[in-house]
Length: 341
Image (cartoon, rainbow, N blue to C red; front, side, top):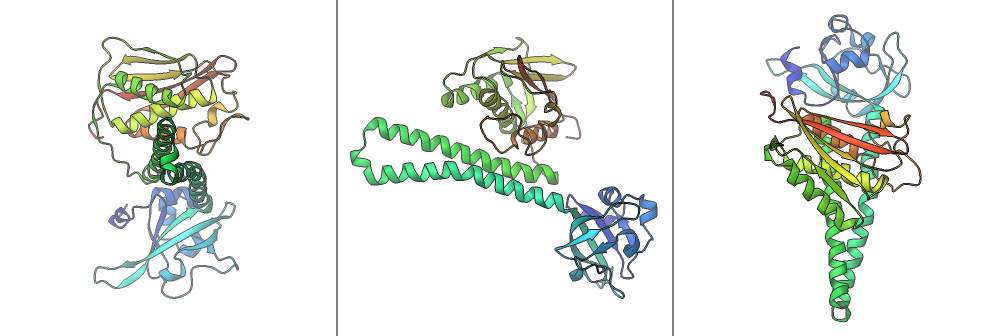
């Protein structure tokens, strides 16, 4: 791979084309997208191996010097040889030579479904934000306009609701930021020694404020070690697992357990709910997937984000479930991160 693509920090397929319309470099995602090996792409005409057509059927590759403006922020139909056509969104910048003159383009290509996913994320989180923000606005208006006529118990109740809804908004915004950082590989972890036993107890105590019926047991060995991890991110994972168990299974009889083996710790959250159908279990970590009917709504992003956060620590998040008996979500973390982490 040449040095040119090291400066293109997009999680997209990237193709470098010279001024004559010949492909001079591609990244791994472009190889996958175009369905050809790098050795077949480099040195070939872009019009042949990257056949982009406009919505009117005209080729995006015009005769003569390649113009970045012709390709930038537009939707094309990509029809790689031997493969079915599919829509992509393109973005392009001019490629400069050593003397500073324009000589071709650097083009990033993204399947249109990815763009649709991004819009769905925004639409979903926006919808989830509307409810707590409406509640905050309503309670604060009442407090401001009727302060003298409200009793202390009423004021406390309203302030507690505002506090709770503000926390919910903060979490949703954090999720939105985490999605962007996970997809671009720019998630930054602030590691420190964390007592996961105390963290788990703290998470359950916070969730119990919203769900007073929550009962939970903790089973950790006495020698359970502290772990070098980002406490905020792992708290986010634990909170998501505990809240999911309460909302989608049962608040009664949760069990949080820990084990130590081979330089790793494992923490599990188990419930005694209805369980997850076998056909749904492989999909529960997919973005936007919501299992079951007649259950509380959500963004469908929590488990997807949680898995990404755990994997960013060099660990893994898995689930097992038996219909009629309950589910267990389990994440494994290295006690100390790999040297390259």
